[in-house]
Image (cartoon, rainbow, N blue to C red; front, side):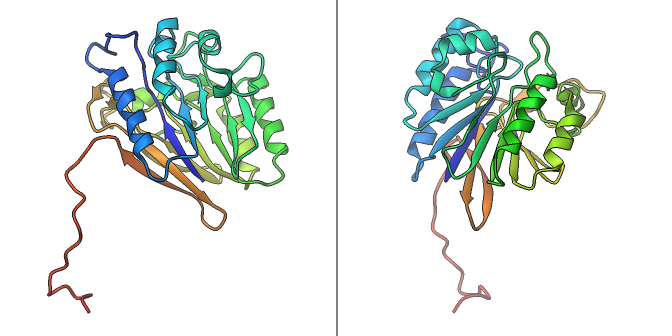
Length: 275
C-alpha cells in the first residue's frame, strides 16, 4: 500500500499569495500533478492540516477544486490555520468519513493499515491540544484495533525539535496523556504530523513520530532560540509511506520540483565492484 502525505497547503482565495510572497495555490496544483504522475500512484492521500491559510469559504472552495483531480481517497485533519465548521461545510464528507460531532477525527478501517485521524486544533490559537474528549476518542480507537498496524495522523507534533518558535506552538495541552496512550500500543507504525514545514523524525513513546515538509514554502532551518521564524523557498516536498506486511512502513521524501535526469549509472572501469 502507498500512502502519500501532503501537508500545510495554505490555500488562499484565487489570486492572493500567502504571507505576501508564497503562491500556494499554484504550488498545491503542482503537487497534485506530481502525485498523479507517480507510477504506481498512491492508494490514499493524507493531508495533515493547514489546508487553507485563513479558513475562509473561498479558500476551501479553491482547495476542493484543486483536490478534485485526485481519483484516490483523500483524508484530512485540520490545522491551526483551518476552521472546523467551514471545512465541514465546503469539503466532501468523504474527506472526513464518520468524523465525530465536535471534532474532525475518525478511524478508517478498510485498508491494510488502520488510520486514526486526530484533531489537535485549538480555535483561535496556534498551538495544539488534545482535550479529554479527543483523548477518549483515541483511547477507544486504539483499543478497537486488535493489534493491526496503525497510523495516527494529526497536525501538531507532540515533541520538541529545536526550532524554538515552532516548539512553542506544538502539541502542548494533553501531550503527556497522549504519550501514555501511544506508549501502550505496539501496533502504531507512525505518528504523522505537519505544522513545522520541515522533514523531521524522532523516536517517540516507542514508535516513530514524523513531520512532513510542506508542498508549498518551508520554515527556515534555524536552531538559534533568539531568532524569530521565517519562511524560505526550499523545494516543496511530501512523504510517501510504503506499507508491506514484511517491512511495515518505509517512508520516502519526494520532491515536487523537477530536476535534471534521470541519468544511468555508468561505472568507471576502475570501480572495485566491476566484474
